[in-house]
Length: 285
Image (cartoon, rainbow, N blue to C red):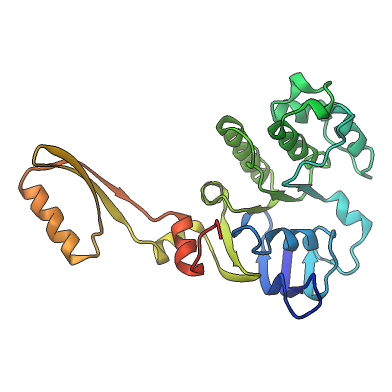
């Protein structure tokens, strides 16, 4: 559904690239995570894929269409949920969705049903200017589903929302995937990506570091550890031991033999830990 080859993009024109030779493919019906810290090039790539920025160099195809010359019909097939809410503040939530529905050339979903789906039914007739940031985020999220898209671009869908709403948003993403929608998820939230994505691409400084499933990345690059709580001199202590380190194995055997262990839990590496290992930096910079 999406094919990108040797994509380059510069905002300055002086040889410094926000996107530096990126290549990847997204298959029909998968949730593909595009992950990396702020400034890595995630939003720039999404803007190119959705026609908001031109293709300067390289090749980009979305639903088989060359993004250098996309047909108008393509935009009836894609939905875009922006990170920063951009709804009309003087209109109500329902009026916002009704207006955007009128812009499509295809049948659209019921705006009120979408508002119910994201928990905004009770605020449907309130002006968006009175909404909290999280409510505005949910409105933009709902708006991106108006045209029942085949390809859905979702940028930081859980930013600024509470845990309950985060869970609801994740369920909606899963439901859309079950409907056969291809989801391009842009985020620096590795927990959300791990829970949702079939495959992820790690982006750092405009380049792709690796592409694989979260499970395979953790198996290949992660390191399992054992969390041990044990008694020592009458006090409860916690240690993190690696079964791959001989000294840690010896220590664990000693604690078990002495009957000092209170709890024992294995823990696999997180996707964020794998990213740090491969990219040499965390998501904060």
